[in-house]
Image 1 (tube, rainbow, N blue to C red):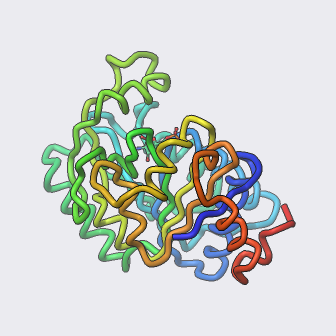
Image 2: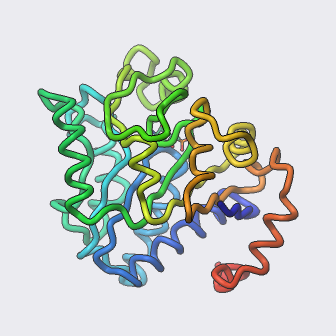
Length: 264
Ligand code: GLP
């Protein structure tokens, strides 16, 4: 795992977006694993800008989202499908047929989970998995005690997550209690993982995920076992990390980050 600390949330999102753009240019048929949430909205806005101003080409790319609420139709304004269409898919030249999310409205949810796993495999696996982190330490909706080897399945959301996402639904009663989510094992199978976290409210959970023990109580800590995981944080989210100077040293000296150090 490597940790990159950027001054602001905007700078952190910018680095994540530029990294995605570079991987897309290197492999136009890339398979992205995508995340939702407030943090990612910034990343998608930058990618849209790169598409409009710089011709960033999504025409051959495919995407698999981490999760979807159970019981919401794709056209429901709170669904993650709606979020993705609004923030990215409708604004770039991606072929919508190559954009996948679990169907939270499927009549047989377990069969839908299996189908999703099969589809990811059929597309050759995920090349680049973008991740956020919830305050419970979840990646996707892998709430505490999710098995490290778990695959796509239905998970009950914790009260804390329901409360955290309530603002987007108007009130906690309207937040679905279940979601389909890729498993921790599904995520660890991605060739590359990039976790983006910004803001002071993420500082505690980021420190536990990055510098704490690997534990299923904090699903994001499983990323410590991934061969190629980059954690990008702003100064606020990094504030409780003990080894900030070390991470900054790595960023200054690692050849991969050379083009990203000074330029916007
Ligand atoms: C939801 C998503 C997660 C995301 C999290 C953080 O719970 N299922 O994938 O990481 O939100 O969201 P935010 O960026 O709004 O803090």
